[in-house]
Length: 118
Image 1: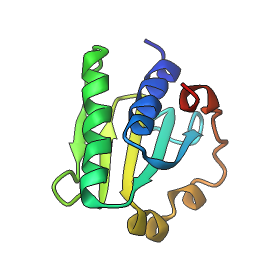
Image 2 (image 1 turned 135 degrees about the vertical axis):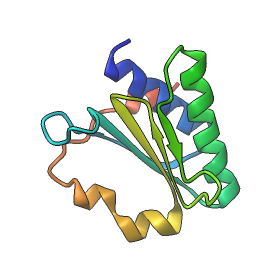
Image 3 (image 1 turned 180 degrees about the horizontal axis):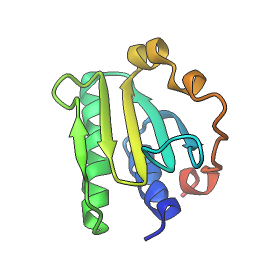
């Protein structure tokens, strides 16, 4: 499975749980951690957990290895490591505080409209 297909699975899963402001950054050549970062947020701890759980479940159903899932209990910033894709699921307040989009401002956005319209 390509890294773009992994990203697509994660985006669709986040969208299914009504994640807000879903953004994918192409990290190729910028980060050794992953090829793509998925960034989104929920408006409550329960929603943040639901988004993260859905991403994990859809990844596992697709035969992917979830290498790491951190921050689930606190539900303020959950990181899901899918190898070539790292999903960052924030609580709305935390996303505004950490501003990963600005930190990685030199990373181009990936077009995910196709995944969001399905």
